[in-house]
Length: 481
Ligand code: BG6
Image (cartoon, rainbow, N blue to C red; front, side, top):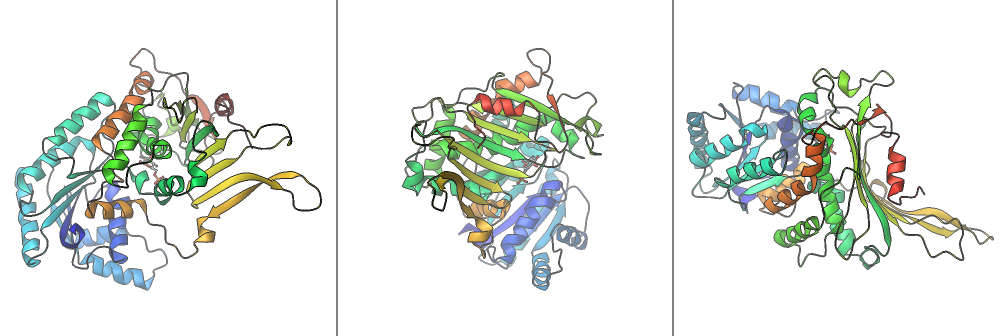
């Protein structure tokens, strides 16, 4: 298996992604015994550092708030796996140095250490250069090579195609692992099981039983300090076009022939191809303004003055196939809202009227975070002597039901998948292409390519979103239960 004889190289080792996600995830896998104890991890970045500097930096990325002795001991062992090479991303000689460093490490492994995994924790403007330089100078002929890359993959259909085509010159689809970290989340992975391992679910999973579906992403903080990046992307590129669309495709795809990566991704692509581009009429945009001492988006120093970039969007997608025709799928995402929550809410149709009055609709909620849960809102007889119906819940909240389970971090799950050569939870090139087809026209409209840029509706920092939101979801048949 690849994971047992692989050197992992993290490019951009001193950057934000490496700090927040890559190193903590590598450490998490190491600590839980999913990486061999003699694994070697090499950091590469422009910053000049010696090994000791790199060690203390990498260790500072790993959280151990309670100074747990077991974690501290693992951190010490983890340190021994780490080395560092500095160099710029376009300096070919530096890549030769990196290659020599890897060969040295591999020589010490004797028969092991033949495979190389390259993790791009890099800004997109150097993706192609680094991809090319690795291929030319650091590619091993005696083992397997893999790259892990992550969004942004372009800004619209054309730029995404250009990027993909450039990378394709050096790296095959088989060697490429495109991360959408939502695919590594436990509850997103659970959707396939819920749907296809339960007749009680699969039997009602269609337009005859479902009225509308909402996929909601809420964050309680703004773009603080990240406004420069965010402003040129906006919430749709940041969250909807990738994370929420991925969830949508898994919720709506037909049953794959098998659980193989290609069978799953074939079905995802097929359902995405049935979705026409989003329209202006089906879109509501918002931008947060200051409230209760919290700064508005435009008060962030990193945001250009007068920006109309949306920090909130709700948009409704339609699937033109026999299972889903006419069912609205509402994707909503926003920064600086009232709470942290990501959930899927499937609202079923009304029961046939007649015997019950004022009965609420069934809803299936899959809470992705925080506090993973699946619950079904249903009606039951009020306990007691009267015969009345009341709304209640069948509740599968993970931290109550699975008290000892450790839910893995998304990046842990995905890095392990990549080491094991499993592409199921990575984005295939054609998936990305069709995702951009769905969103490109609306993004061009928002970017002002057809004239003036649309003005987003203001909403206060810490609120539920623009006041127009309630009317928006009700327009698609959503009933508050
Ligand atoms: C990233 C976005 O892809 O996902 C961020 O760029 C967002 O803006 C993040 O905060 C959310 O990820 P998670 O795992 O915290 O839900």
